[in-house]
Image (cartoon, rainbow, N blue to C red; front, side, top):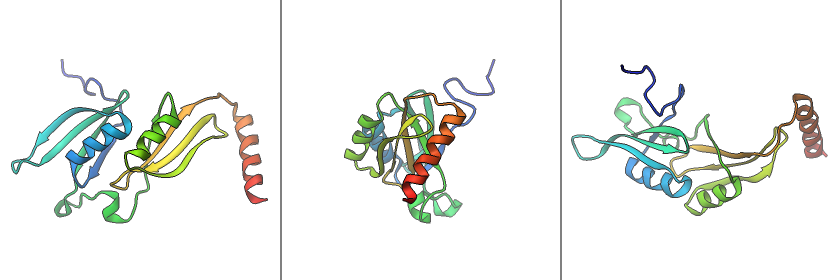
Length: 155
């Protein structure tokens, strides 16, 4: 029986637009250890649709196409979305991704919500948050630590 959510997928699956899908597959493999799952060619030989897997999550990709208003973030001046990866070692993954050409925008640091967290952008303008969960603070502990962080930033 066909399942309503295909095997290996989750309820929510990112579907990103990139200028060059083959180049993006290679970059995500190098930067994040992605595994190519599927590559569907268009009649002209370019890639019409692809799927990669990072950890246990699938990401779909399609090429930018102005005719159908399908643009990567660099084509529209940025993005309002951050893709988030949990990793066993955020420091190592951040180093790997920035050495692969990712633009580091926030190096790894311990955050009040219990993650060691970093941010970077990929060559197509997609924003990535990467983290290793290191603590399980209560909501009260998070609020107190957040207040301390903001008061230190204002001084």
